[in-house]
Length: 339
Image (cartoon, rainbow, N blue to C red; front, side):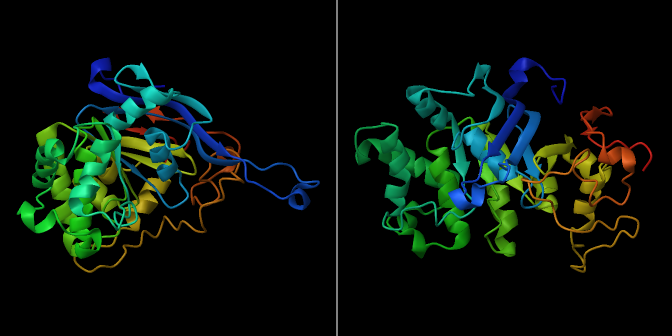
């Protein structure tokens, strides 16, 4: 089911029933007499990302959001489901088409330093994707694109940065460089996986503002993966909340934050520290407890019922589907109308 009613040409990426199940490798002794467990990291998610928007995917560790990003990047293959980019089914691609896809869809990784060759200078870090995709015939051909990319992320004056190594840059500067490396191929969609989680708090807003400026000036589309609701509200146009491999709520950012309908979304919002005091607000009628279950042992019925203070017997038996309550706001909770 489509989560929003929008024109087909307004949608850059459509994900339908996407699944990724892993089968853990066990030794012969470990596997004897035991049923094979399947890890359902992503278990049937459907959403659209509209052209030119910032779409945030949020949830705790273990919710499946990073696996979703890897599926969209085609770093791993889907177990089931379908992905459509710009009207073309890209679920399975041969090598030439995959290479073309990777020019259109780029990723900003959580740890920029780990994703760069420490022996490469800045100019070489930026030249590498151009070389891989056979854009230009040498550094002189590629230098204008390298300078343009550095200017777009405000690593200026260029002469001060272009001959440095990654270890000579601050955390914020490295993330700017990582962003420049993705922009140099002129992609249509950027997957940003926790792009500011390893940056000092003082520079997070600065990096997000830079990314938003770039997005608006280049007409980019972002999938922003994060556990941080406060940055998602500031940065994203729409938010999808994931729990244990499924989307439990989706809608415009302000609507999801100001009027959460799923108990899990309410719990995430309650856990955001207050900006003035730094304290976490306590909602007495929402005492969620325990940790997220293992994706290898998913509870029956509503996946959140083991931690939900509102759960009833029906929640343990019936799997809730996303329900549209208007304005593009959907939730998957059997008791949302009551609570």
